[in-house]
Length: 254
Ligand code: NDP
Image (cartoon, rainbow, N blue to C red; front, side):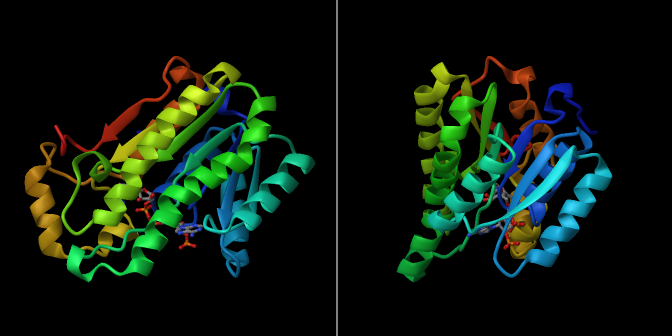
């Protein structure tokens, strides 16, 4: 089932990590609702970005703009967002979705993996929001959606750095919501459970089977379902919700 929120039409929404998986489904959903979809891509992926722009326009996006930046590179983020704001206008919605997981038991965890996980998932999200913030203050009805994870709430063996980064995003969400509420900027977090994407395809079949036994709804989630919830939080349909953390996990963490 696909949602359609009229007020997203023409809204300039930046989604990070939209080249694949959940982010790709979020930008497709926003395009069908007529948003001006803005997404990032990493250096060297210009042809993928062009393909995405074309697809999103065909789906109905008011416009589609790829911005070249890595979420761990503040100079790239700032330069891309400042240029877009100057040429087109303020970003009015942000989805911090780009993320990585490098699962490993604590004894084998490498310092560089901890660093990369925190830099991408946590620091990256804060830096992108920070770079958009001046524009947020000039825009109306801004909504930020941070894609955290259910393991940020419940923890998970072999995901120490990942869970910590996702739990950190919840503190960021609540603080950002408090700081900017007076400027009509909302900020909420989504905690997906087990969603079928490249990230979860990489998991061992045994791990997936174990998860399935623990999910009351007895199935993995679909990226479209996360996209629907994201659209709701971006739209004014959720105008009185801020600083909230919403699980979408088939009941995994009840
Ligand atoms: P994927 O691995 O399928 O896609 C990750 C996306 O993030 C890609 O577009 C990737 O770009 C981008 N990305 C990663 N690192 C960077 C970086 N340094 N700079 C810019 N972009 C980057 O992940 P999912 O779609 O599965 O996950 C999306 C989000 O949802 C993540 O934050 C994840 O933690 C979260 N999540 C996912 C769950 C799941 O079950 N799938 C469950 C809970 C949370 P590129 O193509 O260039 O690599």
